[in-house]
Image (tube, rainbow, N blue to C red; front, side, top):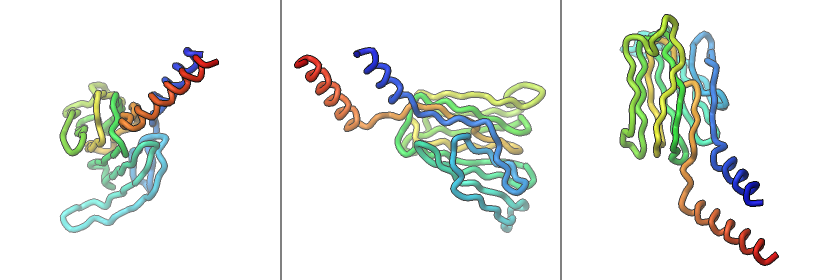
Length: 184
Protein backbone atom coordinates (compact mmCIF):
# COMPACT_ATOMS: atom_id res chain seq x y z
CA UNK A 1 0.00 0.00 0.00
CA UNK A 2 2.80 2.41 0.90
CA UNK A 3 4.55 1.67 -2.40
CA UNK A 4 1.37 2.37 -4.40
CA UNK A 5 0.88 5.63 -2.50
CA UNK A 6 4.50 6.66 -3.10
CA UNK A 7 4.27 5.85 -6.83
CA UNK A 8 1.00 7.79 -7.17
CA UNK A 9 2.49 10.79 -5.38
CA UNK A 10 5.62 10.71 -7.59
CA UNK A 11 3.55 10.53 -10.79
CA UNK A 12 1.38 13.47 -9.70
CA UNK A 13 4.36 15.56 -8.63
CA UNK A 14 6.49 15.02 -11.74
CA UNK A 15 3.83 14.72 -14.43
CA UNK A 16 4.16 18.23 -15.93
CA UNK A 17 6.08 18.24 -19.18
CA UNK A 18 5.69 20.01 -22.48
CA UNK A 19 7.43 18.45 -25.44
CA UNK A 20 7.95 19.73 -28.95
CA UNK A 21 9.24 18.57 -32.26
CA UNK A 22 7.68 20.83 -34.83
CA UNK A 23 7.82 24.24 -36.42
CA UNK A 24 4.47 25.84 -37.07
CA UNK A 25 4.13 27.59 -40.42
CA UNK A 26 1.83 30.63 -40.52
CA UNK A 27 1.27 31.63 -44.16
CA UNK A 28 4.90 31.01 -45.11
CA UNK A 29 6.47 32.15 -41.83
CA UNK A 30 8.49 29.70 -39.75
CA UNK A 31 7.30 30.26 -36.18
CA UNK A 32 8.54 27.82 -33.54
CA UNK A 33 6.24 26.87 -30.66
CA UNK A 34 6.59 24.04 -28.13
CA UNK A 35 4.65 20.92 -29.07
CA UNK A 36 1.74 20.32 -26.76
CA UNK A 37 0.91 24.03 -26.89
CA UNK A 38 -2.45 25.33 -28.04
CA UNK A 39 -2.35 28.21 -30.52
CA UNK A 40 -4.51 31.08 -29.26
CA UNK A 41 -3.90 33.54 -32.11
CA UNK A 42 -1.86 34.01 -35.28
CA UNK A 43 -1.23 37.54 -36.54
CA UNK A 44 0.73 38.84 -39.51
CA UNK A 45 1.91 42.44 -39.24
CA UNK A 46 3.11 44.62 -42.14
CA UNK A 47 6.56 46.10 -41.68
CA UNK A 48 6.19 49.30 -39.64
CA UNK A 49 8.40 52.34 -40.17
CA UNK A 50 11.97 51.46 -39.36
CA UNK A 51 11.32 47.71 -39.63
CA UNK A 52 11.81 46.58 -43.22
CA UNK A 53 10.17 43.17 -42.84
CA UNK A 54 6.65 42.12 -42.09
CA UNK A 55 6.47 39.58 -39.27
CA UNK A 56 4.17 36.91 -37.84
CA UNK A 57 3.35 36.38 -34.17
CA UNK A 58 1.80 33.28 -32.65
CA UNK A 59 0.37 33.39 -29.12
CA UNK A 60 -0.05 30.02 -27.40
CA UNK A 61 -0.85 28.39 -24.08
CA UNK A 62 0.42 25.20 -22.47
CA UNK A 63 -0.43 23.31 -19.27
CA UNK A 64 1.28 25.73 -16.88
CA UNK A 65 1.51 29.04 -18.74
CA UNK A 66 1.56 30.89 -22.03
CA UNK A 67 3.98 32.21 -24.61
CA UNK A 68 4.48 34.16 -27.79
CA UNK A 69 6.79 33.54 -30.75
CA UNK A 70 7.56 35.97 -33.56
CA UNK A 71 9.39 35.48 -36.85
CA UNK A 72 10.45 38.02 -39.48
CA UNK A 73 9.33 37.34 -43.07
CA UNK A 74 12.86 37.47 -44.45
CA UNK A 75 14.01 34.81 -42.02
CA UNK A 76 16.41 37.33 -40.48
CA UNK A 77 15.34 36.55 -36.93
CA UNK A 78 12.95 35.06 -34.43
CA UNK A 79 12.20 35.95 -30.84
CA UNK A 80 9.70 35.17 -28.12
CA UNK A 81 8.85 34.68 -24.49
CA UNK A 82 7.41 32.00 -22.24
CA UNK A 83 5.71 32.72 -18.91
CA UNK A 84 4.79 30.16 -16.28
CA UNK A 85 1.65 30.75 -14.20
CA UNK A 86 3.55 29.63 -11.08
CA UNK A 87 7.33 29.22 -10.67
CA UNK A 88 8.84 25.93 -11.83
CA UNK A 89 12.04 24.11 -10.95
CA UNK A 90 14.22 21.55 -12.74
CA UNK A 91 13.59 23.35 -16.04
CA UNK A 92 15.10 21.76 -19.12
CA UNK A 93 14.44 23.10 -22.61
CA UNK A 94 15.58 22.25 -26.11
CA UNK A 95 16.34 25.06 -28.53
CA UNK A 96 17.75 25.60 -32.01
CA UNK A 97 18.72 28.35 -34.39
CA UNK A 98 17.71 27.78 -38.00
CA UNK A 99 20.98 28.96 -39.49
CA UNK A 100 22.99 27.64 -36.55
CA UNK A 101 24.79 30.94 -35.91
CA UNK A 102 23.06 32.66 -32.99
CA UNK A 103 20.77 31.87 -30.07
CA UNK A 104 20.30 33.74 -26.79
CA UNK A 105 17.89 33.13 -23.90
CA UNK A 106 17.40 34.78 -20.52
CA UNK A 107 15.85 32.75 -17.72
CA UNK A 108 14.17 34.79 -14.97
CA UNK A 109 12.33 34.58 -11.68
CA UNK A 110 10.35 37.58 -10.41
CA UNK A 111 12.10 39.82 -12.95
CA UNK A 112 15.61 38.80 -11.88
CA UNK A 113 17.90 36.93 -14.24
CA UNK A 114 18.70 33.49 -12.81
CA UNK A 115 20.45 32.07 -15.88
CA UNK A 116 21.21 32.55 -19.54
CA UNK A 117 22.10 30.70 -22.71
CA UNK A 118 24.26 32.35 -25.34
CA UNK A 119 25.69 30.83 -28.46
CA UNK A 120 27.34 32.65 -31.33
CA UNK A 121 29.15 31.28 -34.38
CA UNK A 122 27.79 27.75 -34.81
CA UNK A 123 25.05 26.76 -32.34
CA UNK A 124 25.44 23.89 -31.64
CA UNK A 125 28.62 23.01 -33.52
CA UNK A 126 27.79 20.82 -36.52
CA UNK A 127 27.43 21.05 -40.26
CA UNK A 128 23.64 21.34 -39.86
CA UNK A 129 22.03 23.06 -36.85
CA UNK A 130 20.82 20.47 -34.35
CA UNK A 131 18.69 21.08 -31.25
CA UNK A 132 20.57 21.61 -28.00
CA UNK A 133 19.28 21.25 -24.42
CA UNK A 134 19.87 23.66 -21.54
CA UNK A 135 18.87 23.05 -17.91
CA UNK A 136 18.27 25.23 -14.84
CA UNK A 137 17.37 24.25 -11.27
CA UNK A 138 14.97 27.11 -10.58
CA UNK A 139 12.79 28.62 -9.46
CA UNK A 140 11.96 30.03 -12.89
CA UNK A 141 8.87 31.95 -13.97
CA UNK A 142 9.85 33.08 -17.47
CA UNK A 143 12.12 32.75 -20.49
CA UNK A 144 12.84 35.29 -23.24
CA UNK A 145 14.82 34.27 -26.30
CA UNK A 146 16.04 35.35 -29.73
CA UNK A 147 17.57 33.46 -32.63
CA UNK A 148 19.12 34.27 -35.98
CA UNK A 149 17.04 33.08 -38.92
CA UNK A 150 14.16 30.96 -37.65
CA UNK A 151 14.50 29.08 -34.39
CA UNK A 152 13.39 29.03 -30.81
CA UNK A 153 12.48 26.76 -27.93
CA UNK A 154 11.16 23.44 -29.18
CA UNK A 155 10.52 21.53 -25.96
CA UNK A 156 10.35 21.97 -22.20
CA UNK A 157 10.27 19.70 -19.18
CA UNK A 158 9.91 21.03 -15.65
CA UNK A 159 8.55 20.42 -12.17
CA UNK A 160 6.00 22.88 -10.75
CA UNK A 161 7.05 24.37 -7.41
CA UNK A 162 4.18 23.51 -5.05
CA UNK A 163 2.61 26.33 -3.09
CA UNK A 164 3.00 26.08 0.70
CA UNK A 165 -0.77 25.63 1.10
CA UNK A 166 -0.68 22.70 -1.33
CA UNK A 167 2.08 21.07 0.71
CA UNK A 168 0.08 21.61 3.91
CA UNK A 169 -3.02 20.07 2.33
CA UNK A 170 -0.98 17.12 1.05
CA UNK A 171 0.54 16.60 4.50
CA UNK A 172 -2.88 16.69 6.17
CA UNK A 173 -4.18 14.14 3.66
CA UNK A 174 -1.26 11.81 4.30
CA UNK A 175 -1.75 12.09 8.08
CA UNK A 176 -5.45 11.28 7.62
CA UNK A 177 -4.64 8.21 5.48
CA UNK A 178 -2.09 6.97 7.99
CA UNK A 179 -4.51 7.45 10.91
CA UNK A 180 -7.30 5.62 9.01
CA UNK A 181 -4.95 2.73 8.26
CA UNK A 182 -3.80 2.49 11.91
CA UNK A 183 -7.45 2.36 13.11
CA UNK A 184 -8.23 -0.48 10.71
